[in-house]
Image 1 (cartoon, rainbow, N blue to C red):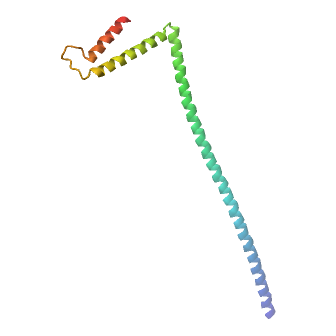
Image 2 (cartoon, rainbow, N blue to C red; image 1 turned 180 degrees about the horizontal axis):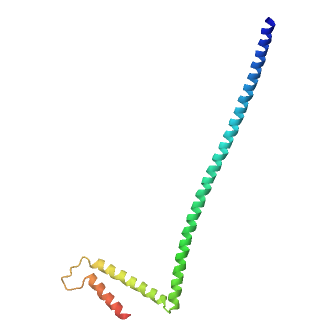
Image 3 (cartoon, helix red, strand yellow; image 1 turned 90 degrees about the vertical axis):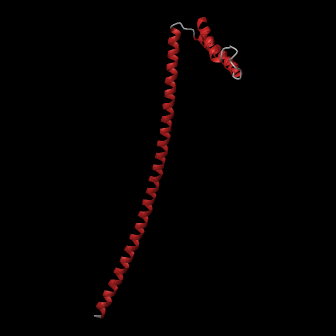
Length: 143
């Protein structure tokens, strides 16, 4: 019986050694799998961040492109309008010149009105707004 118990003891020791070896292998495999999973997570995170950056840049590019498309459309529309006006025989250069002269005259009158603000109108002189109205009527009659 002693032999039987000694054989059983050896079997138990062998089983314990095999179990310890298997446990060690399993722990090693688990650590390796965890390291692989951590590496995959890091790669996926990096890819996600890169995708976000790329999406942000694409959105900014699209916004910029949309802005310039609108600006181009405005310029094209203005050009077409000017070409249409020119085709009808209008001389815009003269109109622009007149507008600049009117602006200069208005600014001169406005500065004169600023100087006259302290004066009383009891002496029968016209106020600045009355002068402006007369000036506008005179200008229309010259056209």
